[in-house]
Length: 159
Image (tube, rainbow, N blue to C red; front, side, top):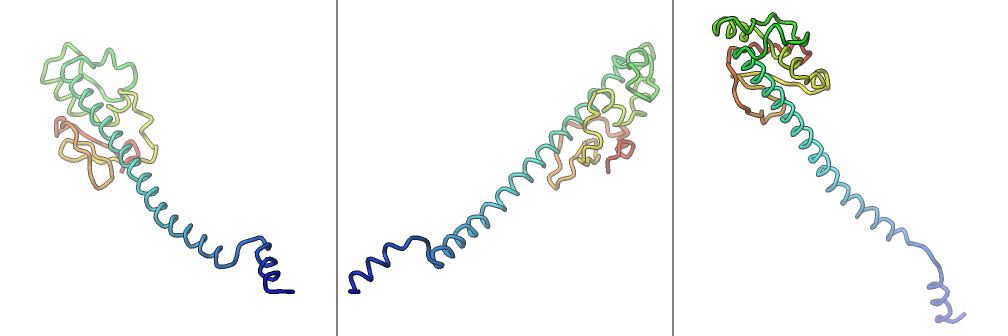
């Protein structure tokens, strides 16, 4: 067999060499090392955004509920069994309505506003300085309601 015939015989063999396979596997490993942290970062960012949105919804519900009780719009007659707290009547004076509003809890506001789906869904919230915060490091500051409003998240299973 001549040299030319040997070269032709070698060229006709099909398949990949071990070196080629190792190079491809190394490239895939490098791509995975870059992509996986990026995907995890995107997922964490989306979850933090959802927590902030939920915290803002709770804060808005607390603001609206508090203002409604103080103004007499939300009262004993129209609470519809959604609130366990005793609310002042619409005819009670402004002082009585304010006192009643300050005795409410965030749990009452959430129930009244129909945000029960946020309870126990694995998202933790906190309360400080009249704001509802999500548990991520960059707490979401939202419009303040009266700092005396009782925010008892423990009654809802929140931390």
